[in-house]
Length: 280
Picture 1: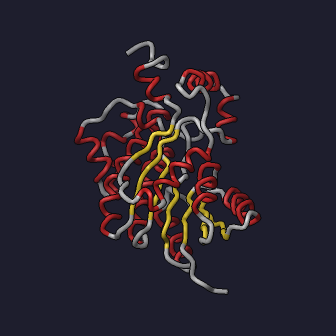
Picture 2: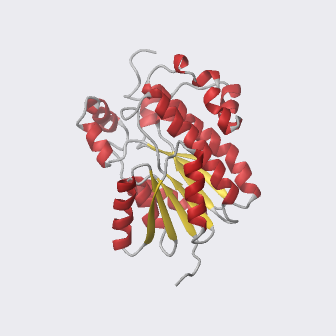
């Protein structure tokens, strides 16, 4: 059967992306893109065995050409009606330049390119991070530059030059702050097509990667964070999917250009509770 289906793009073959795809993707064609094709195939296999209709593709988030290629492939199955962007690298996985190229620039390009083809009534969510909420406030002009600078000029911004980025965590924080600002600006453009776009900023979510972090050199830091946050525990990918479901279904029809912090109260505890840094 060559029936056309609505298509979901799932960028990033991880636990959070898969949880959202399971919640939202039945009856759709799910095109899974990941830089590591084996990761994409593994998630595709799990979902196919659970009755979903998925296909795996190699996709490099830092390459506009790679993003365009997967969109062309996806459109062979039908109209793109959903984007779930859960791709990215973490501060312990990559150097500053790679974090900016993938998490900041790549996400901006993906939102822009999908925004050119998203169907009327379509929805998108991109996974940001609590890290973007923990950084000191930027000036209105800096926020505007992150939101509005043409994508191919983003990495040339003075504020994003390596000498102005302290370390990989700072690079990650500013990338995630940029994600939220790009979502706001792109939501205006998506709205012209009758589509919606939001971001979700999870805290510590239990995934294979997080378990590695718990057992790694920064493990005590993370364990302390979730022990002292109001929820007293880390979160699950399905709890992120709960919010994505609200945002992507008709119940969320009035929500676009917004960011949702899902961190068990860790950011609140960081600013106003037991996780406050000792030195200001």
